Image 1 (cartoon, rainbow, N blue to C red):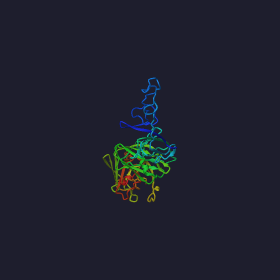
Image 2: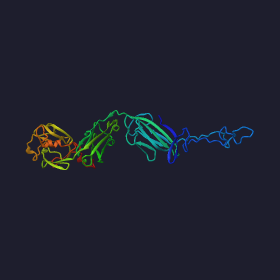
Image 3: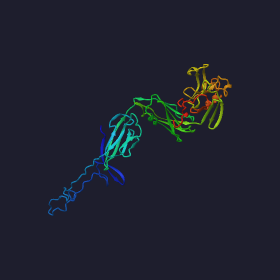
Image 4: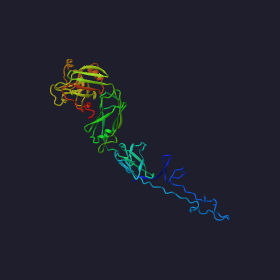
Length: 430
């Protein structure tokens, strides 16, 4: 179906644009319309004696000096605008793609007003070209939604035309499942990295990144980095400032992440950055220095042995898992004595299995003097764990998002995508 077009006239009153219907009735004020009123003939209105009438009572209503019959009116022909508005998609269209399908254009004039709104009246933000030739929406429309378009354009003579169209966007048949590591209203450490996972490969990465934004109460800038086609991590340039209020805003439901696949989620997730705690593990001295809000404490630890050294680099507490069963059989290429332990106060640092945890099976003499673990950082504990041990106190005082940095190990640096280790990548590369 073609777009509906109406012609209206335009005039200027006191510098304001006045639009009146070309076929409108009623008595307008000065300058109120372009359809001129009929002028009265010099002979006056019908029924009033003419000054040219003979004294003997002869015929009255002599022809007016203009030659038109007395009482006759002339009507101005409405002007037709030369501006022609084209709205895409056409009126009545269905299954319209939410991104890139909507455009309003004009030939023979300039667009003056474009309004696109859904059935609730909510308007779509858009951009009018500098030359007035076209209008496009600023972002994708909502899926499965009916929209109405109304546009006005004027030609060089100021005559205005109006066009309208209605269409409905498609309802996605396929959506990706999206998950992250954030809980609503939770509190995290200053090293927190928000990691977003998709269950399908993402092809339109730029569109997806634009669909996930961060709002902070102190202006902290957050940027995303892709690891492969299904993982997008977000962090600021430097550690978060304690107390920062953050809201992750997902607007992916109407984003086509891959051909025919949409993001499937529109929601906000608020969280808070808590106190600062940064722990530095020195594998050479077998000590861990913990700095919490400027207060420092030093704990004896045992880290990875020469056969299974701990990763160097900055890692982040990913999860607090309590008692975890750890088995040597899960380590590829494991040599030496096999083990199968119930390990208390376990906090994961990497996907590959690096933890900070309690250790009850080693003698107290190894802590602070030797490296005996299979790559983890261990503190003194008792079997089953207890809150009063060094491991228990460190566990209870830690948050997901706390930073643990390992130095002076014989192993290389942890990769940025191994856990929440993106702090090991320069901001310029992030």
